[in-house]
Amino acid sequence: MDKLKDKTVFITGGLSGIGKACAISAAAEGGNIAIIDLVSPQTDPTMAEIRKINPRAIFINCTVSSFVAVQNAIEKTILTFGSLDIALNNAGIGGAASKIGEMTEEAWLQVININLNGVFNCMKHELSYMSNQKSGVIINMSSILGKVGFAGASHYVAAKHGIIGLTQTAALEYATQGIRINAICPGFIDTPLLTKGGLTTDKEIEDSIVARHPMKRLGSSAEIAAGFIFLASSESSFITGTALEIDGGYLAQ
Image 1 (cartoon, rainbow, N blue to C red):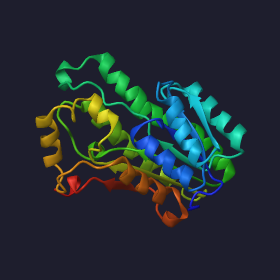
Image 2: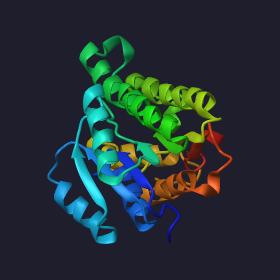
Image 3: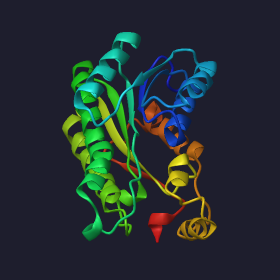
């Protein structure tokens, strides 16, 4: 398995959930892995798991909401591996549920700063390097909620819609420079983020979420990782500006 052999893969939010699954898959495909995340009790076991598959992996402590911190993380990645070939801008948070009229400014800005501004910060620095390199792949993690609304989650929905807009615009701007830029729109995936948001700890809530998907189940991180590898590899060489739906049929309704 060498679809990403010797490619440098930069992954934000790579210590758990979808990001971790994508990192493990990329390592198995031969990529050099740079995991960007906040220090966590899970750092050591996660990195050990990735390095067991491919020892060419580093961890960089960084919050994507910081423009300078992201720049430094990308520079460290390039200094370590000599290139930046693939970027997965995946870091994100759910945010507390609230109607718009009741949402605090703090709650709004927290989600926007990480989920949307964080993606811009990453793309800004990734594209600055890739445009000089004349090659690269960027994949932004949006959501089904980047295409439809969801009551109580205006901050999250707005950010994920914005990610698709950034993706499409950047794809147009860099299409002739050897750079492909796409997004992934997962349905509800069984990850720690859902658990933290209480969506899988309450049986009634979980059942209602599952029922929204025609396939009548939650997705798995491995299923999203498979889509990531496809978009990251040469198998998708004529695909750019796309928001790939991996959602169990959610958006077909």
